[in-house]
Image: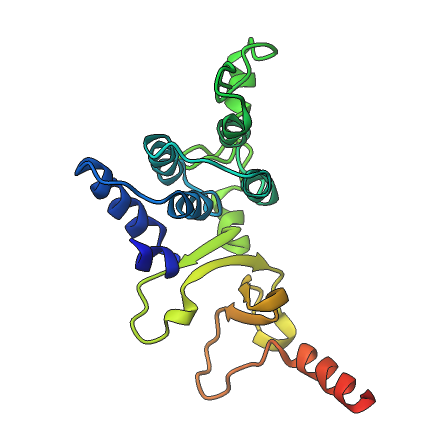
Length: 214
């Protein structure tokens, strides 16, 4: 399980944690929080529901920073309101009444309730059309299963296209690692393997200028 978490493989981590609980074992609080964080970074209600269930089975505990980070991750990718409301329950007192996925008040109409789930998997309410989705691409990608380049594993967020460099209008995805996110890994569409583009060219040029000034 720890290996799946370190590789940012959410599905394998959820499966491993479920097996541990089913066999009367325990999962550390830190691992449960990490699994839930991975699940909220990706669109998909089934994966999210499984991670929430694991958190409940493990009686997960959050500090203020972890709770704020969890909700912030959902808001940053414009997750369905229902998912945000579910996670807000982790910040309530033990004796408080839990929040339902949609409010009891102000959601009298069926359409109002449906709005709380807009953007959820298998529900295209308020989402892009099929044509637009092909052109724009999903907001987040998860890379797993690499055997030689495990550094490539992780969550990639969509960035604007780079037609001047890549000669196409397809989206570019990147993830940042290291201190201050200085190490960037890119994922993009490119047709010429003999001439690999350098999307870090501008950053490298800026660093070189700083060295010369120093």
